[in-house]
Image 1 (spheres, one colour):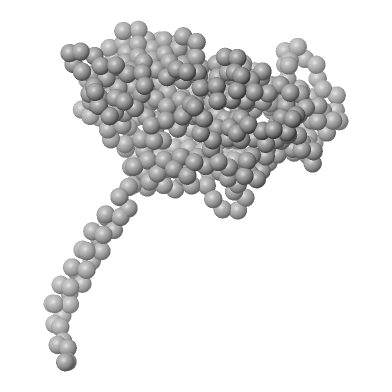
Image 2 (tube, rainbow, N blue to C red):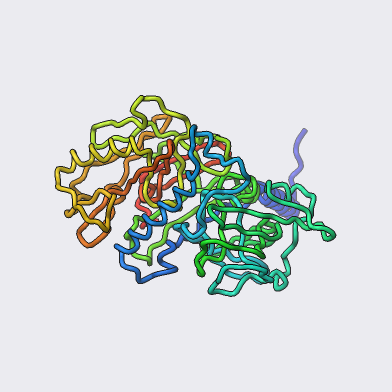
Length: 445
């Protein structure tokens, strides 16, 4: 049967209908927004922007020793005992190395909070403050925001933390979140709109985010630190909360080297688009231990030049023997492993170490070993070999004096610190349970 010719008005009508249908289909898929990238600011560039590099180095190591003592303060007989049989997270809040700017509420109020991969809760100091540490900027006032809400008790949101209780007669969800020593925050689990300044230009919002409105906060916090952004693996962490809104529980970070000028910031990307792939990318598995917060990986050994040194003298490697921590500058390994590493580095450098009481117990040299020193390669499970930048292996501690950016602990496990992570695009994917490394000039992102 012959087809009838359609008139021009009919053709236009059909085309318009198809265009509308296509637009609606596009609007429905994907159901999430694209991810975003934010600036990370080194804590010393906020607290002490004019601090000399040598003082920054000394302070970084001092904070690290306090931090690792907090992580491993117990006599740990086996690696699963990283978990402290308590709902509290073991960090020193004052020792976070990078700060993330977050705006909270409507209208948005800017806060600068420690970005911490070793804790889960995002919290800030709130009015009224029954007992709060000194803070330079005004504290967040829930009454000034039209989008603030309190989490009901009992509720699914209230159960995201183990340390919550119901406050009668209001049935609000009270929380207590502890850190190392006497540092802790207490208050109400609440919901609020979070706004992030994106490198793409337009701000990004996350409505109804669960956070801690802290009315009782004590410990070793700095007056410029207005709280903590927990980006650990737990269900209440920022990474877990953005998963459904921004395309997955994943994020990546690119940390600039230690002595980079403060005008150049590190970057952290969240959600869709933060995947790390392409030439040079290596991937290892995250290891699930008792504590769900930390990013545990398995380090088989480290090569100094062409000489491979196993993590354990016996050759046996326990799964999850290291965790990645953006808040700890040096890489910290068990004492036996460190002693073997240091001896091999000394053999490879062929220079006389500097014996300066102010730098002990660090291995330091009086020449620029960044160019002459050996290349170190970290060998992670799954044949993931990460070559450490020489500028991150020896850090200038004083004018003309460069120190080995690793140290030791009596714990059987260790920390892969942010010195070693510098100039690598590192992607954490909680949905795939992996972490990926890609050599990158982070100053150019």
